[in-house]
Image (cartoon, rainbow, N blue to C red):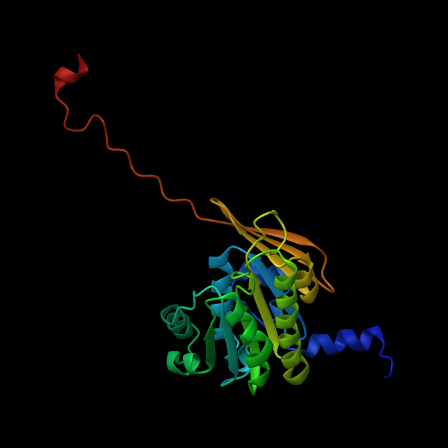
Length: 250
């Protein structure tokens, strides 16, 4: 294989489309959004990471000139969190001036309710899909049963299945995973999962803010951004002097 200059690789990467996540803070952290030639792992808060997948699934279906990957593209959505909400997808599609019906038709969904089902979907079923431009796996290790050797071997087989479709059709791949229950900063699935992703982002939902941490990126440095939540307006206290009689003042 021939050698390429660093400048040529840089220019090639810049020509690839960037797809917004629909989350302005995450887009800022990632330098604009998702790059097609990278594998992303978002881990942490289940609700936030799932919502990012849903909004990205809509935006990706916009025309290239409007920041998408082309109208009518197919998206594979493997749901291990059981949180795919077609009503939220439909409402968001309307805000993006897209047909909710067409958007939902272009999302191919498979749900996994057990760890064995997740492995079967990723190892054997995923690679058989044709013309898929985006692969999303919601909660790839949510159903992770135990930290034993055979479970990690299952995860390796699942990742090999993702690599098959990656080699064949080169789709945009976004995975989500929960935080390891024994760690404050590592995804559930350990080094096997974290080494597969080119880009690692940890998302924590705090009471006052949402924290986004760029843990790993091939050409961006580590970073941390906070999105502060709006405070609830204080209730107006009733006027203590209202409707009082003169007797109250003496």
